[in-house]
Image (tube, rainbow, N blue to C red):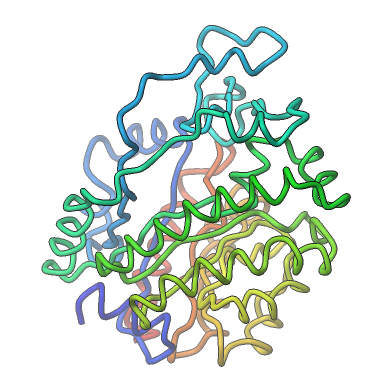
Length: 361
C-alpha cells in the first residue's frame, strides 16, 4: 500500500497498513535534532520514509506589485526588522523566533470607514498560471504520496489579523458593513484557492481558523452561524463541486465541541487537532466516528513537553487503539513542538507509530 493509499484509507476509515507521522519543530529543537543525530534526515534516521511521506502544496502565486508602504497604516513606530504579510499584517519578533509567537499588529485596527477598506492595497493572485500546482500534485501522486493543499487561516483568522480581533468582533456585533466587507473579501480569495486546488487534484484541503479557547468557544454559536458558517460552507462546496472526493481537514486549536455539528454541515471530513487538554478524543470518537476522521490528539501542552518517552508511546497506542483497525485517526502532536520538548519524546512518538505499523495493520 502506497503512502497515499494508506492515508486516504485511514481517513476514510477503511483500514490502513501503517501509522503515518507528522510534526513541526521550533528552531531550538532542530538544533537538538542536529546534536542528537547529525544532518541525516528524519526519514532516513528512523528508516520510516513511508511514514513521513506527504506533500504540502502551496497555492497560487501573488501577482507582481510594488510593495506598499505598510508602515503608513500604523500610528506608532515598528522595529526595523518587522515582517509584513502579503496583507500588511505586521509581525515583530518574540521568544526564540517561533513565528506564531511573534507579536502581531493590525493595519486596519483604526479604520473608520468602508472606503478605507476598499482602497486598501489588497493582494491579487494569478489563478491562470497554476502549472506549478498541477505539476507538484502529479509528481507526488506518481510517487504514491498524498497531497495536501494549504489553506490555513481560511476566513476568520485572516480577517481579524488585518482588522484586529476586538474590533472585528465589535463590527460583527453591531452588524457593521465593514465586517461583511472584510469577511467576504477573504472568503472570495479562499473560494478561488479551493477551486484551484480541487482542479489540480489535491487529496486533502487543509483549512481552518482558531474558533476555540482553552475551555470555551470564542464566540456564541449564533454569531458563528451568522458570520462564519455560511462562508466556510461556501468555500468547501466550491471545492467539492469540482472534486467531490476531496477531503477537507479543518483546524482549530482549543475547545470547539459545540461547533462540531456545524462544521460537519459545512462539509468537513477531518477535525484537527483535538487537543487533549481541551477535548476528550474517546468521547468525540464515540459520537462522530461515522462521519469524521481526526488528526492530532498528542498534547503539546502536556505529554510532549512534560511527559516521559513512555508516556508518549502509551498515549499514541491508546489513541490508535480507540480508533481501531479501521483507522480514522492520524495521531500526531497538536501543534508546533516548542523548546521544552525533549528530543527523546520526539523519538518515542515516531517509534510508537512505526511499531504500531504491525500491531495496528
